[in-house]
Each structure stands twice: as C-alpha cells, then as structure tokens.
Image 1: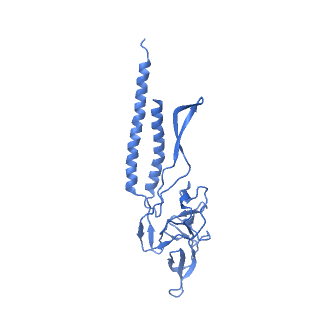
Image 2: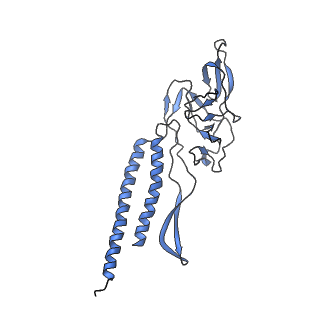
Image 3: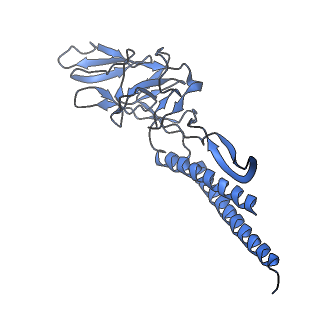
Length: 251
C-alpha cells in the first residue's frame, strides 16, 4: 500500500508545479509578446534504505524553464509606438534588476529620461546594448530593420533623424530559456550576440501565444487527475487499515 500512496503523492507534487505554470500563463494571456511557459523537465528519484531501494519516490526537476516559441497573433493597432517582431527574432531589454534579457513585447513608450522602454518600463536597448534616448520629436518611425527615426520639433517636414537601431538577434533561439525573473536568456544567464536579423513591423503588436481555452481545459484535466490521486491515497489507507485488522489475532 505504501507504493500506491507514494505514487499518488508524487503525481500530486508534479501537478502542483503544473498548476503554477498554468496560473502564470493565464495571468499573462493579454501581455503582448508573452511566451507560454512549459512544464519543467524531470524524472523520478527513489530513496534508499539500508542500501535497498524503497517504495518512496520523489519527483525530480531540472532548473531549466522552457517556453513555447510559437508566434502570437498580430494585431494592427496603427500606433507609431507599437512594434512587432515579424520573424523568429528577439530584441534586447534591460529590466530593473540590470541583467540584459530578450523580449518580443512591443508596446513601446518613453520614460522620464526620454529613453525608449516597453510597457512595463524595461529599457529597450540598441545594437550596442545601450539605452536608446530620443530627442523631442513630433513623430517616430521604426523601419523593418529596427532603425528608429524621429521628426524633431522645428525640423522641416520629412527630415528624419536616426537615433539608433533596436538591437536584435535570432541566433541560438533553440537554447533560450526563462530565468527565475521570467525574462528570456540562455541557461547561463547571458544573451546571444546581436546580429540584427529581426524584422520589425511598426503599428502592430504581437499578442501572447497563450490560448486561454487550452489552459482552462488543462486546468479541468488536472483537477480530475488530482481527485483521482486523492481517491487512490484514500483507497490505500482503507486497504492498509483492512489488512491491519486481518492481522489482529482474536484474544
């Protein structure tokens, strides 16, 4: 009976982690460019008692958090501050923690220092991995290769000034994972070198690649699995109690 109960408990622990991923995905279903979290890879480990394997098994997980790199749907917003990556590339951001990461979140804007930032205030970096600072301007244009052009206040119509390129890369995409802060990097915490291969579309936003319907179906399925494993634990307890009663000799 111990093996039955331990197997059910191991499954419940695994579902707890899957529930976390599911909740995180649903919480970010409306975040532009969000990449859906995938369950951690793992295996099972058996405890040893006096050099013998016991029935107690524990779920083992890697620290690598993978994500789905499927593209989200493109939304035509018509806003000059919105930009979408049209191919498999990423652009560079610098979150508040200071560690450079990769992103596809394209709802751009300016902070108090006139630096280009995304919707949560992360700095959008240039091809030299430096903040992009914009002068006072009346309009902005972002080309398909990520060059940021502005119509400065007082300049003749049509005279655009380049303020830099949005740094981008599409190399080593298959090696990218999510760090503990939720941002995308390589497993060692670094980012690939800039190669300027991403292609941008101004006036568009890429939506999250999370399907709310699929996540809700997964939630229902996990709830059923949870109930089944709880019943297995209860059944193991009942069988153990019945066995104990049979072992009691009459007095």
